[in-house]
Image 1 (cartoon, rainbow, N blue to C red):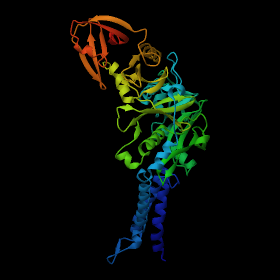
Image 2 (image 1 turned 60 degrees about the horizontal axis):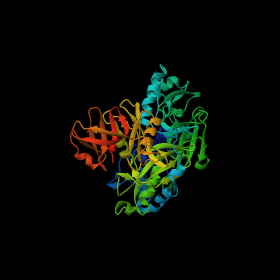
Image 3 (image 1 turned 90 degrees about the vertical axis):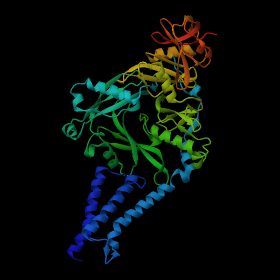
Length: 536
């Protein structure tokens, strides 16, 4: 073989390997048959090899009008791999494996009793839920960083994650580099601290690390946390890389690893975590059952919700989920957080396929153990509760956060923050899960709880002794409005407005200007605006 032929044969291989090495360093896939990016990277490199063979050795795909088979070698191999991957994935889907998908969710779900398992709120002291949403926490964190002077110009605030620190819910985000040049200038100094936001009382603080961290999602080259984790555990397929601190305040990066129950990439289920010391870069892989107690998220909420949806959609077969939909249910498309014991739990509702206006149950997903508790309580879905709460303050335009859940006298009650356009918490609202016309708003969590108990009782039922009966004279015609499907009448007097639900108080629609009416007043929603019903 001549040197020219050797050169033409070797160069495609060498250049393909060099490109493959560069791709692996830039975006390293797992050396794992279950990682889709590993398949597509290999397919891409085979195509590149085929092109290079044409360039260096076979300048045409035909010879004397017949196919040049050697010229097609790389393309043929790429095509075969792509077809194999796509066919395996097609037959690994729920169409052919509905029972296996459903089992992956069903094996984690157990039925619980809400009134006995969830701690009752006493005297309005609520510390086990994340009332504030992540958008509001991010806005508060940015304001906190803005008060730190030059530090705010040197670093940027990363993405907030809900976690627990010593059993208390927190939203935390580490500082980060604002780009390549800032990383290059400050990499020796590292990142000095993070921002912690209390999602219950709305306070925020900047906390310095015991030692500056060097591994970050905003760092470059080997200090980039995604690249560092993949190089540390080259065969691990992981996702959901996030920042946490342990109970002593030491910083770590956590990533969830997965197993696939069906085929190559079908039915992914969390099976462990990678725990990386953000200061030293030391990375340890744990099975899910062996993860350190302080790690809040071993089983991410998105994965838990997806597994519940598998059980709800495919429990009675794939085609039932598309046609008859008998017994089909799915989770609400968002979730809140609650601490149960020392563990962070994601909370969301379950809606039947027959109706998306209400929940047939709700679930608490333990993100440390992966266990899911289902509570079969029928009630308002979360967005209806948000709308009901926003209706109380519609003139201010406040936005309700996604609700969390508390136990008030044995009954489940939504609680949420009401924030303005500047992401400042202005009020709090509580809405009865089973009857979202029972809603109150207050300036503090304690005040809101007190109003709810005074109006509806500790269990959300009945007329409290504190309700006041008044006799008033109307000074304007009765106005009506519909809020989330519920009709309300607004009665105006010389100095007040009373909102009365039409359901159960239909006589209010026949009142006229100048009429006297006796009302039971439950609460003052704001100055001169009261919640009331007709006195019987």
